[in-house]
Length: 348
Image (cartoon, rainbow, N blue to C red; front, side, top):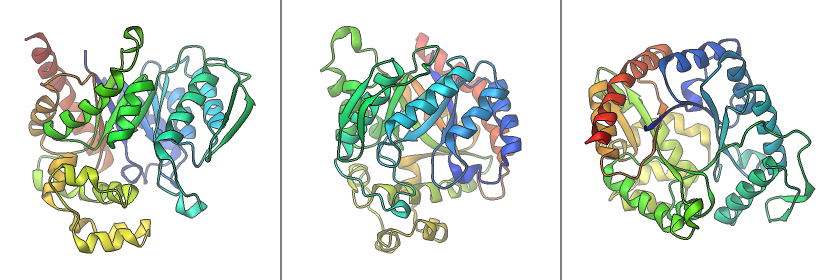
């Protein structure tokens, strides 16, 4: 069965008070999602704290954090936090590692050797969660005889999230799961899956059971035009985080407008709030799922029908004037029809 995941970009839940977060987690569990993901965009509410609240208010749903990185936080601290929540949640936790990006300039952090750092952080966390003592030196972090004094009650599955060719291939080489980010079209997904498969091919047969998730920023609304509007800011943010790399844009046959590129080049993250209108409809189509519930089911079906996708992740955005609970309710009502479509296609 295809795993169905729900996450929330930070600006979608910026107005959700911590006292109310548990209710949102419980509602996501009742809706039937398999995993609830907690964003790690700085400097909004802290990811592991929200995962802890979710653990207290749920009993069965898996709880994920996305994304952790090896630049802003030493992997030993990330492993410690994850193991602590795993104990509280009886092992119902997972984590995605990635390049990070948001908030790094504020902390004076500059990324280098990104793919190698993500791999080193992934392997360090996996080894520590398994009870190993880790010594590793990288330009981004140092571990000397690092080990956990509290271990998770179950094996914690770890993902690597990316949209880049080199990172996806590396993820296929080492990760439990690969989260393909921001590819919404069948062509883009197929291109990304090919990168992952090249990495998987280098593994031994017994280690080649890798989950692959298509993780797409999603806005569902009865008015498709409003749904498209709800996606533009998120695309501006992903363009900011990937700057100056534009390969995933050119691979889709698109380009960033000069006006938007000038704003992104200032490296002022807050300035993005004023420029979503500079994101084209073509970019929304390529990198997001936007539309009615029926259109969303069709988009997901088209994305998965060629095979190779084991999981689908919806990072829920809000259309203009749409409350979070309205978006959540509409997404939850879409879930049964989506599962039915995916089950029918799997059985054919």
